[in-house]
Image (cartoon, rainbow, N blue to C red; front, side, top):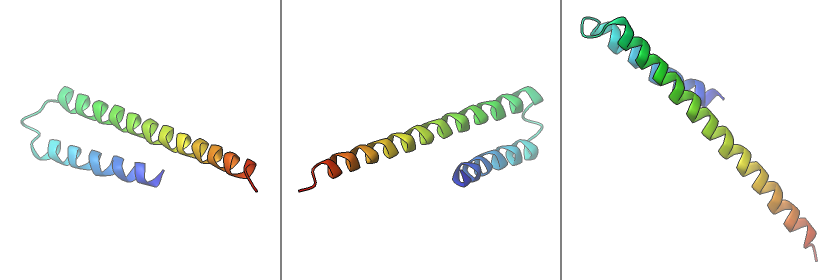
Amino acid sequence: MIRMVLMSVTVTVPILAFTLIYKDWYDGGDVGIILVYNLSIETLAYYIFWSLNKFQNRFLAYERIIQFTNIP
């Protein structure tokens, strides 16, 4: 969870800094769209990592069941 927060901060802070430095290049709508897309990408990454973690835990449990049923 902490890694996801750090990833979120490392992506959002540079976007905000860039838009504040070059604020005459962008209007408010562009900045809003950039931040919304950033949030949706972070949400997707969180779901992917959560799904992979859940799959790995279930696969490990399955391997343990197979291993414990074949005890000589």
